[in-house]
Structures are given as structure tokens and as C-alpha cells.
Image 1 (tube, helix red, strand yellow):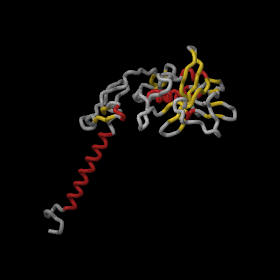
Image 2 (spheres, rainbow, N blue to C red):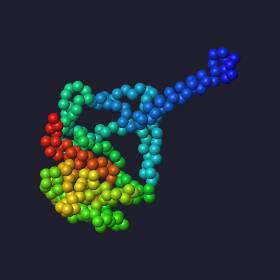
Image 3 (spheres, rainbow, N blue to C red):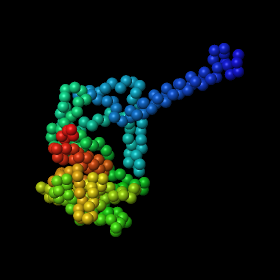
Image 4 (spheres, rainbow, N blue to C red):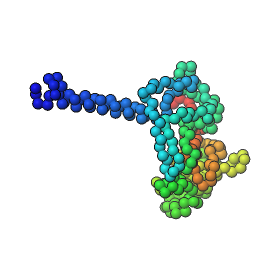
Length: 259
């Protein structure tokens, strides 16, 4: 027999090749199971569960949250059944696009949709709230060569004033401005809402903050916080979704075809 041969028909090279095939098969199976920890099993449009089979859904794994804030096990049987959406399909075939039937600025649909994240603040490595207003994070200040948005009116896409910037919210970990706090006039009195910085443009020359995604009266409809000096992950998600939804739903003309 040749060097390396175990029998006249099997040698070491063959065993290594077969071993690699088995390892690669196991790796693909493991990865395909792990990427189904969230969002699975799938559902049909009518709510029926798609049978995932006995192989593809992994056993639950427990993750310990930072700072001793409990544990999360995934996959689990939790479903987003706490919300109902005012939408209707545009066609009868499965998977057809849906259009809003209520107020799309408030219904959380389309570009205004959001995930039910934890209703707790994001924390720094030291366990303190990560995103706070500058009235709390007094160690931060606006660079003197930059325009200070506090006190500036906030102007919507229609040129109407929707409120006034009352404070600036900073990210203690990233050292950047995340939100502008806007005091908006509502029917039931002043409301304090957050405006994500990426939706705002501070115009120092005109002394105003311009927002193209919503109109002036929409600021009074923006989500509010439970704590005046903190914002939770869920509240951040809803704030982003509100202004994101405005990019399509704030004005009916934005839903028309481009061509």
C-alpha cells in the first residue's frame, strides 16, 4: 500500500476530507439555527404560524442583561399581539402591500413602525442613564463657535412654528447631541417632546431649527416621555418612528408616484 493508506481504498487524505465535510455541514446547521432566535417562527398574513420543523428552531438560550437587570430567554413564545394596526392590503394575494386606514402619523405603520424595545433607559458602562438633557449633564456645554439651539423656534416643512427648543439632550458615552427637547403648544397645554438631531437642521443665520419631515402642528402630536429627565429605549424608538413616518405621511403629496 502507498504511504498514508489505511486500507487499499481509504487513506488519511480521504478521512480529512470527509471530516471537513461533516464539520462544514454542522457549522451551517448551527448558524442557520442561531439566526432563528428572534423573529421566528414566521407567520402568514392571516396569523397562521409557518411550521418551522423540528430542526431549525434552537433550544432557548438565557442572556443575562447588564447591571443585573434580569434575564432574557430566546427564542420564546412572545408575539406582538398587544398592538392592532389600522391597515388594509392593497390586493387579495398574500404579501401584498398594506396602506394605512387611520392616522398614519400616529398608527405606527410603514416608515413610522417601531419595535417594542425595553421600556428602560439605555445605560452607560457605569450604570447611569446614557442620554440626558444638559440641565442634568451640567458638565457638557455648546461650543461657543456653534449656534446654541436653545430658545430657537422649530419650523416645520410648511414654514409654521411648531415649538421652541428648551434643552439639548446629550449622549454621555458617545459625547454627541442626540435630541433637541421641544416645547410644543397642544390643545391640552404645553407638551415636551424630543426631536432627533438627525431630523433637525440648526440655522444659526436665521436663528431657527428647521425640520423637513413634519409640519409645524405635528410637533404637538409627537410621543411624550414618562420621565422629564430620562428617555427609555422604547420612547426613543417611538420618537424616531414618528418623524420617520412624517417623511412619507406628513403631506399627502409625498405618497404620490414619482413618475
